Length: 192
Image (tube, rainbow, N blue to C red):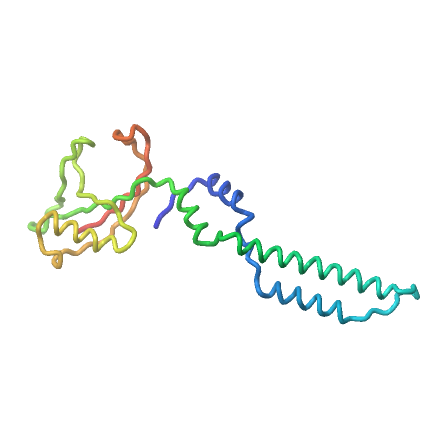
């Protein structure tokens, strides 16, 4: 799938969702918190500089730090369960920024009755007022098989005799008379 996304729109989306991205609490964070608490509660500190009870004061400070850290871990776990934002939702949000409004597959059907011919099947489209290759909406999965089915049905021929080959794709902006605005098109060219 090709996406055409404005850099500024992507930056704005990521800025808006930054508090939801990467906020899952890993098991190693929980283990680190428990280990820190166990080590501070079981440790004994000797007095520093012969100050009475300085070891107890240091132990109390470390225990308070461990308790605050553990409370932060518990808060983060609660927030991660409440926040269901994940990579799949982020991908959908990014796909929603896609400026391509129409994905079309153009099918160039070469005249194979004459080996030296460079003629292709076209039809006249009144809305565009020009001749066009047969074209179909591009589908996301197995587009070539779908094109073969469409061509076989439209031309009433055996689909087993049709070979479809991808040639190129091009993204372009064109004025849409039916919508009275410029639209972004992604045209894929196939040859049959």
